[in-house]
Length: 374
Image 1: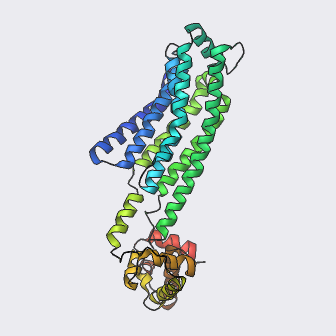
Image 2: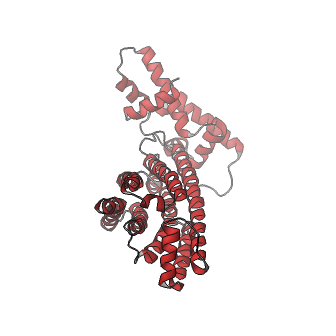
């Protein structure tokens, strides 16, 4: 029993500790991203409290904790998507919060049915459905409750797939947006959030497997319970740790763009295609004749300022005429220049070559050398 207690409490404690850390950070430093991670970890804590009472067989509390479990199980992944939306968009709209509606409806339905059952019917449902994963002998409210649980499982799988797919698209689009504004994207690509999403995806597939098997399978012994307990505790700790690290998100991106974008106001009319083509020619001149790509931490706003226009038009020139995002074009030019330097000066050390080519970090140089140095 003591081992069961420890194993069932492990994910509860991991989530609870991280929820406290994120809450304190939000209160002390007003970190909006940590506010959303706090919501995620807090709901995950309540979810695993439901697991805890199930595995220690606290039968008297299960009608309450099972309701909480059904509600939180449908809320954790939408809450994580809300976090990703904030990181990539800078704000969370009503559409994202509506993803929590199934959680609310599922929780209310379970609570209402438990409330209408008398205690013998409750205990029959708990013993037969929750601990044996069987509908045998269930009738009336108990049978309806079982089908509500099954529907919640299906909704869970759908939400899980939606969060993973949508999260990947949001992060991809943000990385493209950054690549269109910065030559040096190191530390600006939301890679930590991508890692978090990968961890969450792993948890997702494991969750589906455990969901299909049923919690009752893991109540058969401590050696079986140890598998989900250790896996989820480890992955949730990693999510908390990665999420606690400083990240470059949309708010930082918008702030830097505002600081460096002292450009003329963009007219409301669309730019003529010929003007975009002219800008592309001027950009090529800046890069080939003046070698502007050698400027450290070069931004598209720097190019726009040099040409007396704004970054929107320069971005159009890169994407529509030159045919590559700003970061790809600049880094390819840098690597070509670095190879040229190496041929002209064989004794020049790599760090000096990277610095002269426009790189502030060797990590960025090697990453782009691997990509463009073929």
